[in-house]
Length: 262
Ligand SMILES: NC(=O)c1ccc[n+]([C@@H]2O[C@H](COP(=O)([O-])OP(=O)(O)OC[C@H]3O[C@@H](n4cnc5c(N)ncnc54)[C@H](OP(=O)(O)O)[C@@H]3O)[C@@H](O)[C@H]2O)c1
Image 1 (tube, rainbow, N blue to C red):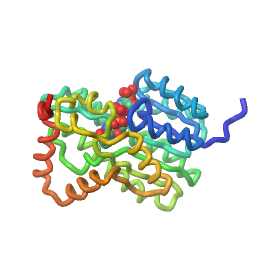
Image 2 (cartoon, protein in one colour):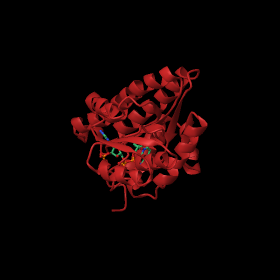
Image 3 (spheres, rainbow, N blue to C red):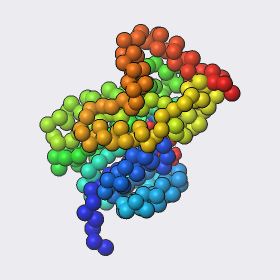
């Protein structure tokens, strides 16, 4: 088989939601794909992207583990990575003391440990070549203490901060880092985090295709960060000048179990 001349993109969490739409944009814009998620649903997503003309390797791996990340990177078979979209992540509702610790740890290990291990592994290869684009899915949740999603919001505060720091470290290397910070988006996130009976879980949310396109455009322009949507821009601007205890109280109203209508 002749080796592909298309650039390669790695997209994590591409089986649904924002990651699915990000991977679709990569395929539509001429990239081959290595995609990953931790369940078999990644295989049907892979078929969708093949139908768009991409050559696709789909990896089922738990990206909270370094082994899972190693398996994902191995699936690129040494091809240079033009685009890395470190998007996989999940939340966890309920009060922290009522959460199962293994589940809370899985949030940290997926959203932080696996994410930064992947970025370090692929980022070194990009820096060696002097080119590459990295998009990380942070969140406006990183601007506010997340009562009843405390661990998740903490991980996104980490990611937002990490993204800016890494971008600065890489500023003269040809590698760009873009932090996509969505607000509440219509994906499987809220169901998976057991937040469906909360106000935020039941609120109208952004379209994941729109969010992904905003991230894609910002990444292609080499921008440092982008908050998707004007309402979220306003919310994050207000969060920057609001005392943390007030933000925590506001978050309680959105995320406390039973705060929704149902
Ligand atoms: N939805 C929102 O309101 C919102 C707002 C701001 C930021 N975000 C961020 O956006 C990113 C994508 O989330 P989404 O909203 O699109 O939710 P989603 O529809 O639940 O998609 C999450 C994706 O990540 C994968 N994933 C989660 N944990 C994984 C693990 N340990 N190993 C491998 N794959 C894993 C899931 O795969 P499986 O289905 O196979 O588990 C799925 O493909 C996350 O980082 C999330 O924090 C979401």
